[in-house]
Length: 194
Image (tube, rainbow, N blue to C red; front, top):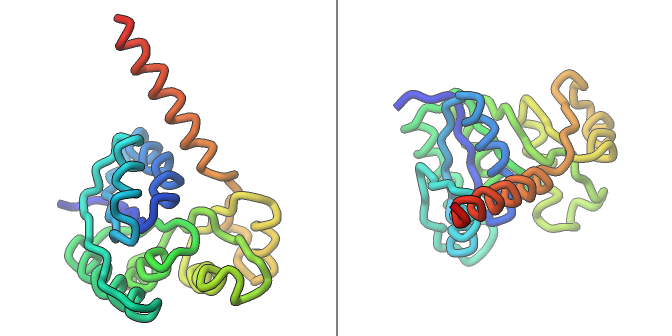
């Protein structure tokens, strides 16, 4: 199946924050598929159900004793997905091991990471939070479009030399997720009363 975009998530917070992006793309007739790496499984399944999303691809979390083996396993699995599916572009969120692995896998296949949602968060300490601070900085060097949630995150990206034309401050998509759930609850209540 040919499509335009592949969203990759690994954790429940990523599912929650990328759900509004997914629905916005679908509502604008943009073909999109969702790959979930399995970094969180049961927790993520609950979030998918709340947002009426069924991932197109669900991977099994790699058996890993440490971060190195987790990242290596995620990179291997996501590389296979990207090679087989041949997306036009990849969208990632935040700073998890799944985010870093997806960005690297796309980069190795020369597939653009056109959206790094929740970009630009920085603590200024490479080891806090660990490994997230390093992950988010590495993804910033690969992504071609950056969507920081706040002016402070925007400033961090600009100070790192990211082209301002590649940045759009969007706010936090968790707010959009809350609006979606409120709207769905109202629709369900109306159906129940009918």
